[in-house]
Each structure stands twice: as C-alpha cells, then as structure tokens.
Length: 115
Length: 108
Image 1 (cartoon, rainbow over the protein chains, first blue to last red):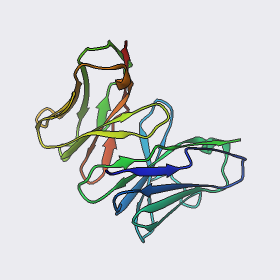
Image 2 (cartoon, each protein chain N blue to C red; image 1 turned 90 degrees about the horizontal axis):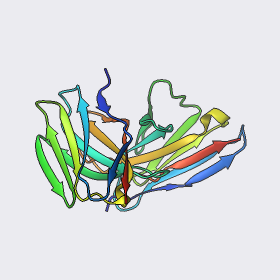
Image 3 (cartoon, chains in turn cyan, orange; image 1 turned 45 degrees about the horizontal axis):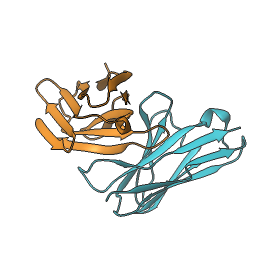
Image 4 (tube, each protein chain N blue to C red; image 1 turned 60 degrees about the horizontal axis):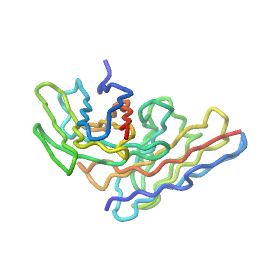
C-alpha cells in the first residue's frame, strides 16, 4: 500500500516553455502533498506544501509564480514549472501523507532538463 | 548547526557484512523517525518508521532510536548487492527534516 505515482519520469523542454508534473496517491487519500527538489549528492529541498482545496505554502526563496502548485483532489497534485530556464533543470520529487502522523511516501521523481 | 547530521560516506562493504548507518539530530521535539532507501534516479522508498526510543526490526533491517543521545541508527544484516543505494534518515516534529543521505555499496 501507500503508492505514489509521479509522471513524467523525465522530460526535456526548451527554455521559455512550461512543464507540468503530476503526482497521484494511488491507494490512499493524501490530505497533504509535498514537492521537493533534489540536487546531485544533496538532500531533499522542500519547495512547497499543498493541502487539498487550498493554496500551497511555499518555502522561502521559492517563487510561487514560477512553480505553480495545484492540489485539486485528495489524490492529485500538480507542479507546473512556468517559463522554464536551464537553471530549473533538476530532479523534482513529490510526496504524500495520508494523515498526521503518517510518514511520507514518495513518487519516483521527475528529471527535468531545460535546454 | 543543521537539524539533522548524516555522514554522506561513501560506505563500501563486502556482501554479507552488517551495515550500520547513523544520524544525529539537535531538536529534542522530534518524535517520529524514518529511514528511506533511494536508488539512483528514483524517489526515496520508506524502509522503517519508528516512534520513541528503542528498536524496531523488519527482516534484515533494524532501526534504533536513542532519544537521550539524539541518535538514530539503521542496521542491515547479511547485506546484499541489491542494498546498494543511498540511505536517508528523516525525522519530524511539525515538519519533516532529512539527512543528506549515506551512499552504500555492497560488493559481491
């Protein structure tokens, strides 16, 4: 149980375009979903926390207009990287939590390359 | 001082060895402790989830929490090449904090 599906697993896009990443909890309802970014040989960097039906809470330094998060249902959250630039190239990972104090379950990540 | 400290390694052991992975933390408010395994280019996979001090065993894995020393460990018995991955410790109070991960290679 507790499977989180993330799609796509990798994407290449041109600078200036937008990319949408989907995160789905397959066998549980996720009241809270989290979006992380991971650089090589570094830990997970929390970007934002989203709760179903409400606006996402962004961490300091994360541009909310650039990284649009929508948590439309208890099983789906999306991250849209708008007007992507090469510096946005990274590994993005979503995670979901069923309730408090459940642990986090992670998707398999999305490797974004902006050319 | 970081909330969670974890030696990045790399750690290399022969197949069959017992592996010990450790993290220390500074926040006494942490109550829940987790270990994740992350293969290259994949998301972290939950291995162990514990609350309070003591040991928890699951197959070849044992998680140990010592709240008085603010120290957690993950032991892997009879290590296998398939255990080669990065291991992340995590803990939470009102939010989650992650270690930087320890890279483990088990040599056949």
